[in-house]
Image (cartoon, rainbow, N blue to C red; front, side, top):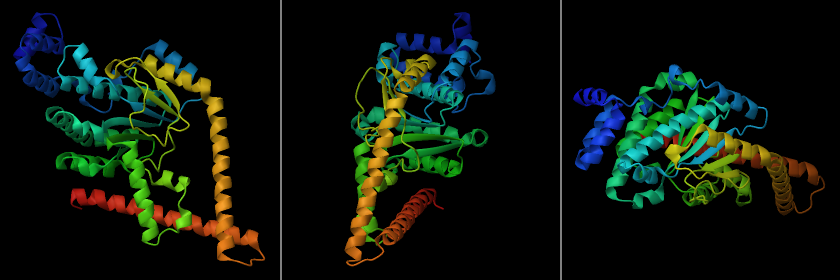
Length: 369
């Protein structure tokens, strides 16, 4: 309580007083930041309280103007710049990551207000394990705290109808984080009003490699025929297989690369590279990115439609060739092709159901169910 009393005497808030002390005595940083976030950080919640939601009329007016145009239903974020923000603000590196999480909760609120129903965020790359042991441990501890906090807010999860998905190689995570992740995913899996995909221990190359292995195993185990393997099936075997591809991808910090994030899924996404560090990202940056998406909407839709037609034509040619190989002298070729296509779709659906069941059993094994 002394810290809060001294802050009042100096006419500043508690967070500012903590940073002032850290500037004078850096060795006190771990204690102070831990104390502050245990006692005063109201943004620890994943969900904003109704009284804390933005009531700025001009912001609402601008949001309503944007809603007159096309709004992306799925937006992906590369949340880059937490460490640089910490250095810029003379903060501990871990405090920069905490500020990054606070910005995520705020951004999710803005997305919900705009009608964006699915958000995918790049939280932790497999490459990040190469960082210092201290930083990786701090990030894992932060993740554990946030997922445990999420589990304390089950009523809010149900109220907002949020489905939490964690995309990545969960096996690479510490056991306590793994368990918190599995519990959050299992609890919210039937919700569908809003979806938050957290890419954790993730890279796109790892994801694509895993999808190829799953298809190869599906052929080996008899779920699939070799001819069933296609780009369309590979897409369904990705971690994001249940979601539409993101229509808009936003990266902060001024970097103009994807950093091994959703390489397959963003083929037809509008890309927005914002020259601001993630903790400094504002609702106006989001609005600008959505406006950029709207300016390119028609051309992107046209390109996607052309690609879809090409994929369908390629599949018809494949089915035709398979039927010719199975039936050398076929009098009713068209009906045989239709039958083969129906059987192929059934095989693929059975295989995808098998993958879902395998994933569910894996999560249950983590929880000891």
